[in-house]
Length: 500
Image 1: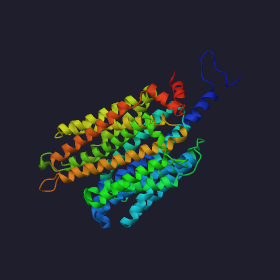
Image 2: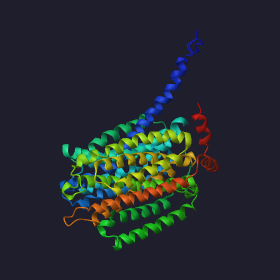
Image 3: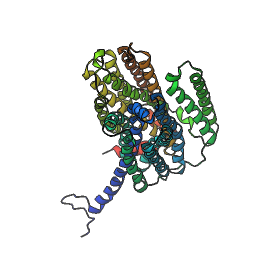
Image 4: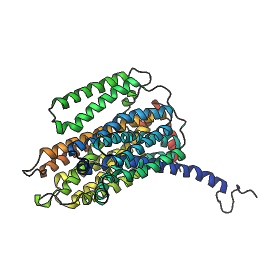
């Protein structure tokens, strides 16, 4: 009797069929694991050094203000290289490019761990910043390689991981520096990067989906000038002064360059970022939500630890150590994990609009609570849980909204633009909150209680902006019509896959 025959008595599934089903699932799980490790490594490295800037500066013999270039270099590199590498992934193959990106991340991380001075450390951080492209490349690989029924959940998980990694970095920095040294802020992530790199080399297939054409060199140059000018002004504006000629000059230069970039991209045959994608309601609303949540995410990562570490004698501080303050962000991280996966499941059934709205409402309420009162620990913890829910929901929804709104061949460039906007939002959030804290101080130099109240209100206001953008986002039915007009055919396949 053939082993492939199904038993009528038991209705059992044939062995060969079961094995055939398991093989693709095992490969899909491996792909998700390796991509998750790569994304987690990048996100952790983005925030891990922030709490240790004083220690790093002291050890290298430089002021903390100069050591802040460790963050600025990473930010600028990620913003500039993400759209370039995302576009190259669409052109030459996402697997090839993500291997190069992870290799650069590994080299940069090891170099940072060995850095004898600030100059070498800054160069290492520039290399690490190339890994900003991990997000668009990973989502492109997921869209190309995974079964349709797993795409939305996986994108939700990967999107949440970028928020999770940033939270883990803030949580882990204190204990690592206290128990070991700041060099281990790079040695430990290097292990994850190495595993992710080996997984990409041996466990991820090359996608057949390509976008033929050439890299838009002129557009690349103009965009680089625009992003560097704007982000440098935002990052250094507090130190230079917002009315300083350098700050204003860079903002003007950046604005002109970005306008010129849009005009150039509308005219070239093979644009770096197809600006016509922005006309789709499902795309531009997702970009606004990403910008707002970039602000909100780093707003909470600055406000909460700073408030917790202030001495209790002030009457509003909690007197926590760096390590203890980091632990208060653990509920935020856990909530991101859970809500990211839940959002992916919801998106598969009802589309990304509702999870995007839920995310906006959650994060707005999360900041309203401490804006109205932050004298009790439960207020901080509840705010953190709601922040995690909001970020996990919204980031998963924005990525899925874009994937469902653009053709597969343009996934990399579209997600790259979303990633860059979230990075800009993070920079603005960091700069605004830092300015609020530094400009409202007591006679002893500590931030006032009012500074935190204003910061929480500002973040809540940005949350309202996210809600408004999410409300304008197209419904599932409207998104289907818009996607079909744009040449996206995922909807019918997703509908079929979701049916029992």
